[in-house]
Amino acid sequence: MAKTKETGKYIGFLALLLAVAAIVMIFLPAIVYKTSENADAVTYTGIQVTFGFKETQVSVGNLKYETEWFKFSFMNFLPYILLIVGVALTLLKMLGIFKSKLFTLITAACFIAGGILLFFCVDFSIVGTEQITELPLLNKDYMSLGVGVIIGAILAILAGICKVGDLLLS
Image (cartoon, rainbow, N blue to C red; front, side, top):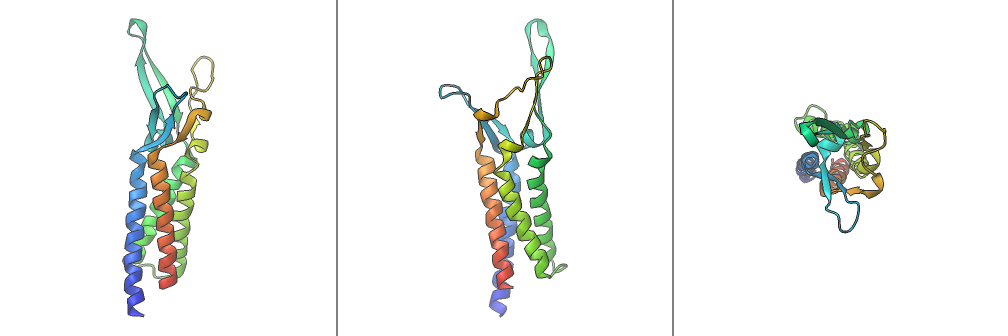
């Protein structure tokens, strides 16, 4: 019995590390925008896609105008909220504040749901519009998932699987 408790602590710590690594993936490319095979790919990080991205450009005659490529997307923010809640609950369990299996189950659900939602980053992104015509600046048909979102989602789901293992061992 003592062996399984000790193993559960290690699995909980592994889940914590995986979840923190998944959260850090917000700094890596989340969306790759490529219009054709010959075109250069433009990448947007998870922070840009989640919280919005404006770029100031200079045109002829030093006129400056701002282009908003992405707007804030709560649905892209929700996976990171779930991962942070899962990390907090894992820390509270490791500190001995919450010892219930229910909190371990909730933590596993947070990690797995957050990981699954990360895969919908392109669908949940809110593309900015042109100022005059109100047409979208980017076409979602040319967007694909970036390496940061893919790795983050896999790490989050693995953290959830670790928490399920912790639940079964405790």
